[in-house]
Length: 474
Image (cartoon, rainbow, N blue to C red; front, side, top):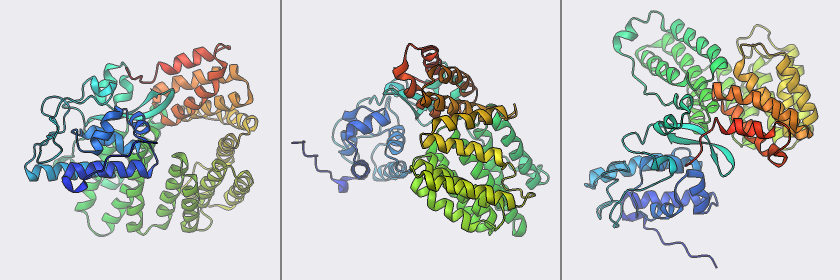
């Protein structure tokens, strides 16, 4: 018989209430403390003590637990509220691990005297003043590659400096900088175009901090505007939010990606631009299927198509996301029917539209190859990715890495492990350059597929190359 869980006292104070919320999330997900501990890189014994308000909770731990439990920021916001309430009630409250910790006193967090808390191998190496300076990086956890928030200085110390670049401080624009900007609409539009072009060469990890800075400046300018200018700037700000969501997803920070994209959708409704709303709905559908919510993606894709202007390429985009969601759900007939529809819609879509100007039959064929892989038709998927790689311009460096990784996984599925390993090594090189989570995720699947073939030509070389570009807990 399992041990009966201790009763919690959510009315005992702010940290008791936070611990109660933590247990509620954990139990709602059906997860044992040990499972949550592995996901969050926190010692299991501390999970129970957090729930019972017997240990100080560093904010970094709240961030990790929120991500591990897919709490969409609720646990972090709850931590902030508890911190504020503890301060107001007179309880000591410092969110650090070393020195004065969180303030476990009889007035606030609990009755056990505080002592330094080791959350994980990463934090043992030095959480302190910089415990909120986190960057999401690929790490080898229990044999899998998972994207986890890690203190930036730990990443720097590991020798993987390129993975630490997305956690740079954001500086607000000065008033005189905004005043000297000239035409803000053209200025920010041009900046966005440059970032999109640069993204495919070096990946978003280096670009996201710059985009966040520009977003702060754009938002300040938009708030100072009125009338038509304010609406036009808001529409551009919406595109910035959507692009930030794309960048965040491609560095593996799915929670931030959902946040940016949700804000973009809200703003799009304010602008009254149906095409913009349809585009963001399509982006939300894509994000949903990519983060494991294919059933939700179907509804979002349907909403995007309903909202899209008739005869626009936005209809094609919506049905593409619907098709892949069906494939991920194992619905092959429905997926093929949806792909047939995309070709029909593309044939009559407005060729001069600013939305989806990149859409062509080759793009749809590549998207279908990904769906074929999801359905287990690796042979046809490998052919599709091979065609995509052959026709891809050299400037699309990151996308080449994505296609190589997917092609390698498809070849592994056909049993050609030697070719899969050879192609995989090429993808590893681009993953190291761009730090793209989309490449890493495919390489993780390839690594798992090739594990039983250890010792065969090229397999050990691929796995060693992959291990060199990911973080390993001490």
